[in-house]
Length: 222
Image (cartoon, rainbow, N blue to C red; front, side):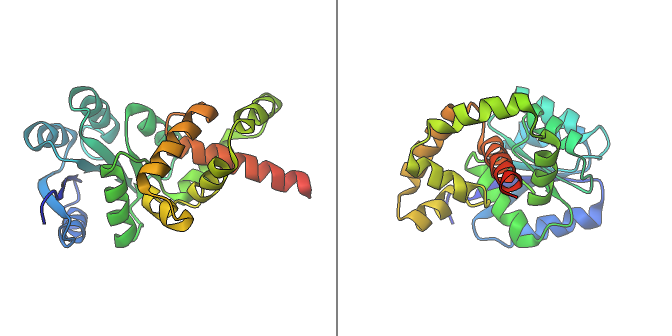
């Protein structure tokens, strides 16, 4: 298949790395172009192979966060996906701020890993649902946030509200389009408007904000 998604995999546990490589390489639309075991290897693969997606372990020698920051600055076209056992919301937030496109736990299924790589290669962002829930709980619902929320959402059209409600469920642009019988290009256009109106940087932040509002409404209704 032409135009395969080119992926690099960096993890200092050879057996686990081999499993990730096997899972990804088995897909007809994915090609594994490089492997490594350290932050230095990650930077080297980004420089030498320019993969579309680089799957990184958080706790590898040299540090995954350090690798993300370097790659984001030196090779911005290379998108990074953290794959780790660390379910720590502080590290999730830091990784996303450093430029990571996604954050998955190592207990994830093969199909979820494959789908996430595909989403990240398309420029989208993804965080494991259980981690997203932790971020949501951490965000809180204090008075200051409550004052801003109505203003942010009041500008959304009914269609944008509909798209946002499906986005919260973790669906890709293509899946949202299929549900609403709209083209993927149309969904991307709506999402751009949604991000601007909600004053967020990416779909992950939009989903968290929308989930926060839904959670608040649920508690208020009790």
